[in-house]
Image (tube, rainbow, N blue to C red; front, side, top):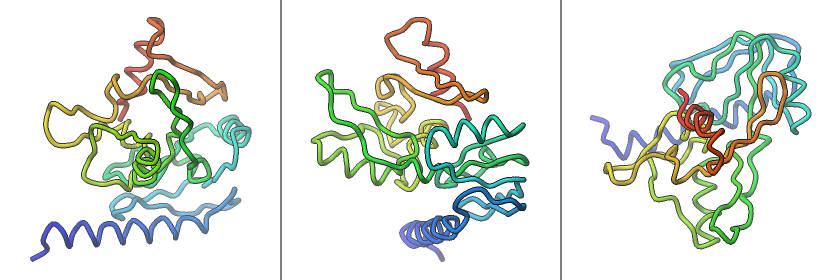
Length: 196
């Protein structure tokens, strides 16, 4: 019988292997390649599998694709990241969090792995009040699917109290910014914060 600890340990090893295997798919590939999520239950055969290195490359990839989806760690049980067109690997955008502002806010790249985010926040004397059972997701993925900790009092990573604003690239390649303080942005933020 597989106990919870052994399952989580083997899942983490499978995910780590999946990430290192995907890293060989670096920049644009001219031919069709396959992709699978961390569990191997979802596969895709996109026309293009891309790893943009900067924002202009993201914009170009979107401008030259009829269908495109971004993926982070692939830690999802469904086909949310799958596209028959282009799939954009967000690994190159994993970075460092910004400095804590006077109001306590800071900028965080959506493609950062939660485990890296937690470590960087700890160094700044900060933490996230609600954590799920895994830290191998990206922040954007965990936020989009409503990842939550235990207990209703803690809410989810997508709660308004934790997300003060978002910056996204639209399908047309426009950089859009949405702020929690703006009444005009409220509906967009709700849709972006929890969208799978």
